[in-house]
Structures are given as C-alpha cells and as structure tokens.
Amino acid sequence: MKNLKLISHPIIKRDLTILRDKNTPSSLFRQTMRRVSILLAFEAARDLKTEKFIVKTPLQKTVGYNLKNKIVLVPILRAGLGLTGGFLDVFSNARVGHIGITRNEHTLEPVDYYFKIPNKIKGSIVYLLDPMLATGGSGSAAIKFLKEHGAQNIRYVSIVASPEGVKKIQKDHPNVKIYSAALDLKLNSKGYILPGLGDAGDRVFGTFE
Ligand code: PRP
Ligand code: URA
Image (cartoon, rainbow, N blue to C red; front, side, top):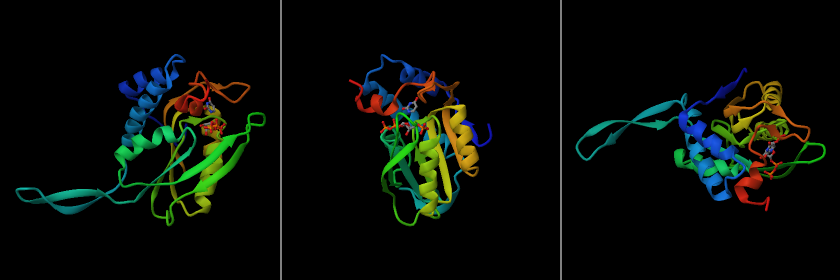
C-alpha cells in the first residue's frame, strides 16, 4: 500500500507474537512494546539526514555526525505512551508533545481532550506515535492538529495497522508516511483490529482488570 512501510525483522515478529498473546501480562507487554518501538525508531530514522562536525577523540580529531533535523515525538494518549520510552532511547534529544484523543465507543469517532506540543515544530521531523491504527480516525485528527500547528514532516508510527486505517490516512494525509510492524486483516464490527492485540491502552496500563 502506498506510503506504508512495513518493518520486518525476526525480533519484531517474535515480539509482536508476545504482544498479540492474550495471556501476556501488562509488565511484559510494556517491556516488549518498548523493545519493538526501539526497532521501529531505527527503521523510521533510516532516511534521516546527518550533518558533519569535528569531534575530538581522546587521541585526535575526526569527523562526527549529528542528525540534521530536530525531532519531535507526539504520542497519542494513552497507548502511544507505550512507544515513547523506546523512541526517547533512540532520539534522546527529542522534544515531546502529547495529544489526548479517545474513540467514542459507539460511533468510533475520535474525541479530543488534550493538546500540548512544543513551539516551533515547523522544521522538525515529527513522529506521531500510536500502536494501533484502526479506523484511522484518531490518527487523521491528530495529524490535522499537528499540521494546523505548523508540522510539515510527519511520520506515523504504529505497531498494528488495519487496511481501513491505512487507506484513511493515505486519503486524508497523502504526504504522511506510515511505519508499522504489521498490516492486519480487517476491523471487526466494534472497530477492533483482527487479529490485532486487543485494546492497546488497556493492556499497556492494566486497566482491563
Ligand atoms: C485506541 C488506540 C488509538 C485508537 C485507534 O485508543 O490507542 O488511539 O484507539 O483507533 P482508530 O484508528 O479507530 O481511531 P482509545 O480510543 O482506546 O483510547 P485509550 O488509548 O485512551 O484507551
Ligand atoms: N484500539 C485498540 O487499542 N485496539 C484496536 O484493535 C482498535 C483500536
């Protein structure tokens, strides 16, 4: 699918299985999501531009590299927080915004309740983090908010995407690239991804018990 980069890696395959398993407790779920997010961050950074500078080793000067663009991470609350720690491990200088959006469980429409992002994000690479891309309503609304606040280079990072969600993001925001560990089969009548991994926010934070 256009604009979709599926990231294939043996460790991601194994970890996705742990995330899908309904018997995985929240502690292991969180730990696994963090590890997957580090791998996703590396892949979603593959084409970033670097700039050279001179660094002094204890022995002599040599060429060093820095990322050219500033990085902004924006998790969609709540489940996107599960990806944030791993992304910060990779992009330790990143600034972090938060977008609070939850789906109305009957209409599946996104309902926004919080928005706080860093100033001056125009030239930054913005990684929008949400493990689940289901109908695409939450992601599309979040991208719209980010664009309204000046974001020009947005990358959407998920763990499990549905064909319906990918199509919606492609239609609403054709200039946003999606990175995902899996493209699943479809949505069920309640808007859950099949086979999916269930409610990601509940599983990250243990709120299903
Ligand atoms: C989940 C998930 C995404 C959204 C995806 O959040 O974390 O944000 O649903 O669904 P969509 O693509 O159909 O919009 P949820 O609404 O359950 O909020 P929560 O994380 O606070 O529980
Ligand atoms: N949100 C989730 O957390 N899981 C789904 O399968 C769909 C939306």
